[in-house]
Length: 137
Image (cartoon, rainbow, N blue to C red; front, side, top):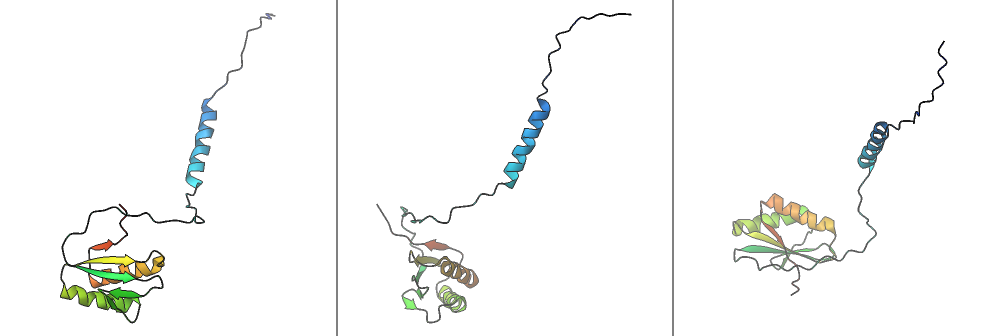
């Protein structure tokens, strides 16, 4: 019988690989489940533009008031809906082929009204659209 009572200095071994695996899984879970939302409670002031003047090509000017009324090249469009605006834009684009559309919208114009104007321009076949802003030197 061997009653050898030698004590080996057995230090506990810490295995970090499972710990790292768990932390990586948690990190992937947090990255995948995080939603990036914009805060909508902020008052936003749109920036002023500093750009060069438009080229000398013919252009149609569409003015949009803050209450959603449209005026094309200074002429008021009676029915301010997408269909009548598309018809007016189609007629004006036929008179000036290749003309761009300059949209001059009031700063307080609802977003839906501007999108309605963009949709009408698409229906009318106008491919080049510019948004006019106030120049601040």
